[in-house]
Image (cartoon, rainbow, N blue to C red; front, side, top):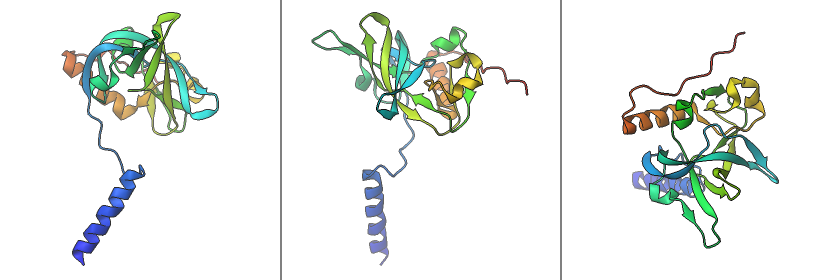
Length: 191
């Protein structure tokens, strides 16, 4: 009876995983050093006809960055027609330039861009257009919005869950031997 119960549990867990119902293991961080799209402050809009995808305009950068998949899986490339593909990855660059982290409530729309595919804009190679996932759950933060909390409800900013933001920043600081985080929070609005 005990082996039948164990077998039944294994079958249920296998089916749950096959249908995407099982919780994924925590993502592993990788330090990459390549061209990438930095979307930490990217403005985004919902994709026409698909409310689950947002289109974000991100900065193209070169250098150390974080991915949660192996670096080879997010390696930039150029196809036979000259179209350049990069992937959205995380770096502390925009925080070091003075952007601040805007905290937004759960239930407001935001865009999860980490590891997402992007096309470098042929008219402006400093920008990339990325297709990201629209998310509406969890407290999150963005380097966009200029500390205006009203934009949390309407802008679909590229962002990350608070815990992920903290983990990503800590990983980059450790890897790059940065002792003081350049990331600062927006001032708390007066009530």
